Amino acid sequence: GAVVSQHPSRVICKSGTSVKIECRSLDFQATTMFWYRQFPKQSLMLMATSNEGSKATYEQGVEKDKFLINHASLTLSTLTVTSAHPEDSSFYICSARTGQGDLEKLFFGSGTQLSVL
Amino acid sequence: GQNIDQPTEMTATEGAIVQINCTYQTSGFNGLFWYQQHAGEAPTFLSYNVLDGLEEKGRFSSFLSRSKGYSYLLLKELQMKDSASYLCAVMDSNYQLIWGAGTKLIIKP
Image (cartoon, rainbow over all chains, first blue to last red; front, side, top):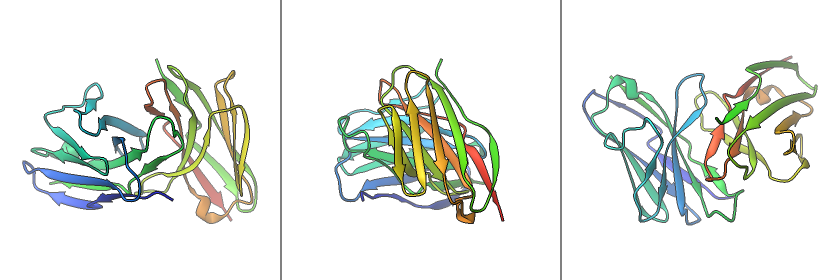
């Protein structure tokens, strides 16, 4: 089946630094990619929706200047956590969808565990 | 508002059958998903229902009733490795996934 590659799987960084997370669809073109974060014992929370070649749509309460999303091609989306702080520590997951007509083709990356010291 | 409800935790015995229920109220409906998530890992896709009825995939089955805003995930012949959280998610009219908080399933020998 289709594979979504997300890396790094784990990152530990110092407060104030920036961290980039990549999400790649390996064998299909993803017109839309979603970025989620999950706090311990809570559900996944949608952060933003990114469409190839256009600006990402952010969910209410998500700072677009802090969580920069770039979807430059049909196979790659990146999430950059700028000036990370300890409260940004979380599990970040991306998912990719091939198109609105194929609702079943929604695949998830393996996730990135971010720890900010 | 949009809401997905599922039990917080369930316990079952190895080899038995367990049914995890999910009720939802969303702005539009473009399908309901069930995912399995082991601790520290990303969720993995289990099933997708967009029409009423039962979908069977091996030991796992998923049922949907759109008129009742209700779904369940049925797990048969439970194995210890089935211990995980099971997430119910509904895709709304904007193709956004609305997630439930997950049901932690504990399997006992």
